[in-house]
Length: 100
Image (cartoon, rainbow, N blue to C red; front, side):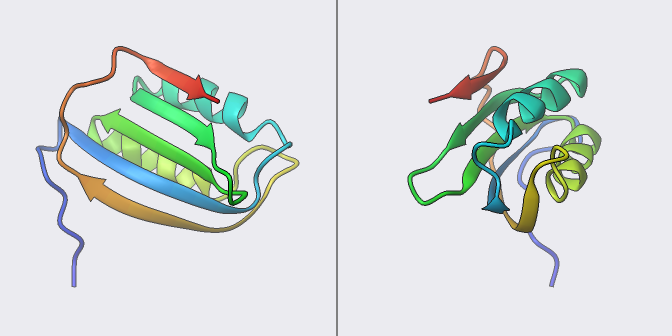
């Protein structure tokens, strides 16, 4: 079964939860740099449970590239898994940012 992806190839949105050793290893700053290089808007944030949350909006190809990168992350990270949830895009971001 294929996961439904609302929007169009030019305008998609995904929420990803990254599990593993992903806090305290520059994961947020590296994700910020990667997402901005890909032209995405959204945010990256540490969560209370030790995961990192990423919400990205933009072109499907750019989101797919970010998702591939999230599976490894920066050099000190150890990613165990990435959960994704495709959502309807709503253009509520002006840039890609780090949230505390």
